[in-house]
Image (cartoon, rainbow, N blue to C red):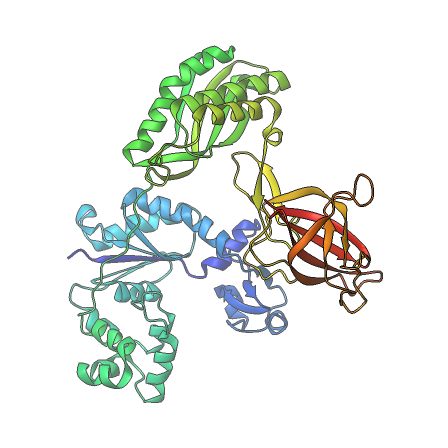
Length: 526
C-alpha cells in the first residue's frame, strides 16, 4: 500500500491575509471572526496572543498586531496555487483544508520518502512560502501528526509499520487539533473526556481493549483506537486534475477583417466543443478574448466579453458570438490594430446529460441565435426576460433580466415575506395599478376603517374605472381577504392597505388593493 504524505503550511489564514494586504509574512498578525482570534502566527503567539482571545486583549498584549478579517474564500483561492504546484509533481491531491493537503507519497519515483519530501518542499518554498512542513507515514492521521512535529522547511518520516510507536507518545490533544479525524465531529469533546478519565497520552488509550473502548466511549473514540493499532487505514479522497479546456488560435500575419478572423477560428471552435464532448460536458458560459498588436509589437487583450447560452454552445454559436463581438468592437473603436489571437475560455461547464433535448425537442435554435444577435448588436440589455424573486406585491415579485443571463442579486423567494398574498399567485401583473371600484349590496362604496375592518362585504366591482358610471360592473360570486399590509409603519405618514381576491360572475378573478376608500387593480388570475 502506498504511503501518505502530508504538506502543512502553519497559520495559513494569517499568511494568506498578509499576502493579500501586501505585508511581510513575518509580521505579527491574527485573523478575527466575531471579535475573537481564530488564527494567529508565531510572531503574535510570542507576544501572548492566543486563539479565542478577544480583540482588545490581543491588541493589549501585542500593540503592533495586524488585524485581519476572516475570509475562507480568500484562503482557499490562495491555496490553489500551492495545490497546482503539488499536482504538477504528483497528480491526485486531497485538500483537507486551506493550508493542509495530503497525497500519496511519490517516494518510489524520487528514490525514497525523504527525497520526495525534499522535492515538494523546494517547490512550495519557491512560491514564497517560508513556513512549510512535510510528514510521511502509513496513513493520514499519523502523517499529519508527523508534519506538525517537523521543523520549518523540514520533514518527519515515520518508518513503515511504526505508526503505533510514533503515536503512543503524543498527548490526546492531538486528536482535537487534527483535520484527519476520520469523520469524527466531536474530536474535541472526545479528547476532553479522555483527559478527565486520566488518559493523558494516546498510548494510554491504546492499552484499553478494543471491545471496551467501543462499549464505553462510542464509535468516535473507537476509531481513534483503531488508528493507534493500525487498523483504521482509509483511502485518500483525492481530486482529479481539471482538464485544460481553453483553446486559442494565433494569426500570422495578423488579420483585420472580421469575416477572415471568424473563418480562421472555425476549426478552433470545433476543437473547443469536441474537447468538451470527450469529457461529456457542454459549455453554457464562455469568455471570448481578442488580442491585437499593442505598443512595441506586444500583443494585448483589446476585446473580452462573456457570453451565456440558455442551453449550450455549439461551434456555430461560438463563431456567431465572435463575429458579433468583433463587429461591435470595430464600431466602438476598441480594436484599432490587426488581431493577432483569439482565445476561448469556458467559464461554466455542465454535464451534457443535464442539457439534453427533451423527447419532443426543445426551443427553436433560430430564435435563440436571433435574440443573441440582437444582443450582440444593441447590447445585452436590449432583450429582457421576466423572472421571479421574493417580494410582497405581485410587482415586487417580478424582475427583468437580460435574456440568456443568470439572475443575480434577486431577493430570495424562500423568505416568509409578511403581508404577501398566499398562492396561487396571479398570472398577469398589470404594468401599473389602475383605479377600480367596489360596492356593497346597497350600491355604497366599500371602505376600510382604521383598524382594518371593512364597511360591508363586496357585492359587485369594476376592475377598471373607465367609461360611463355604471357600465362594466361585475357581480362578485366569491372573494377572499383581506390581507393587511402595514408598509413602513414606523415612519410618519405610513399607509395601511389590504389586498383582496375577487371572483366575478364570468369566472375571472382579480387581485385588488384597498387603501381607505380608494381601490386599485394590481393583477388578474387568467
